[in-house]
Image (cartoon, rainbow, N blue to C red; front, side, top):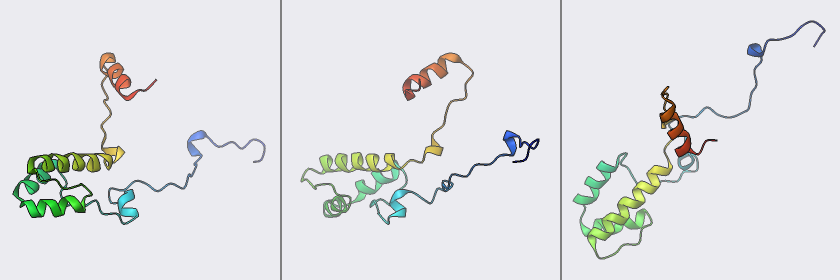
Length: 117
């Protein structure tokens, strides 16, 4: 840069090569891994497994890598837990809402829960 020519900080741009996050792109889709769930909400999934026969429930449990058991209620609980674990892990970060409260007590509690120093 020649003497006397300075760019303002706002005019500088830095590239980092990262892709902008998109709702269609997650690691499972990137690598072609199907999680075995066509439902998007827990309530839809609960309704689906309630209407399944025991044979269908056992087949579905094998698809989602849960060991089938003879007790239907226990199997349903295991499947529900697995659904929550799988779908909970795939929540995009941009869907998490950060509180914007001006109340210092709310922000202090948020920082404590999120373990922010």
